[in-house]
Length: 143
Image (cartoon, rainbow, N blue to C red; front, side):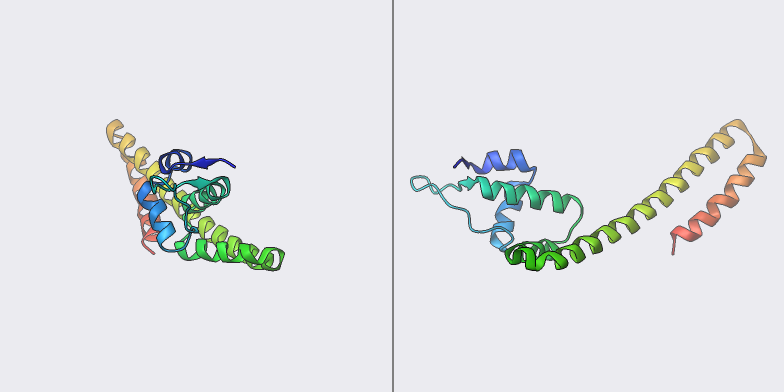
């Protein structure tokens, strides 16, 4: 079995030392074994696999609470599969809504670029047209 230092895990996972310690402290990660002579953490292959999974889930914006639920459901194995599906479907739907909002923001910014190009070109008709479009978009985004 391979063992990894804290710094090696930081480099491989992209999580900070502080985050790794925090995840261990709150029980998101199991207690990590320590080197007998130095007392430094020594992460196993399994620890690293779980940490990399947690890093991926966190990168998707999953909450600590949902990451905890995921870890608990793992213990249930096949019996927890339907709940895992529900957990990930709910998170996927949340991300889909966020993505749609970001696309609306992007559309607004694209119109603002066109607006300022029209201003620079002195195109009053285009300025007026884009102004009314961006006004409507701004109202939608403010909801």
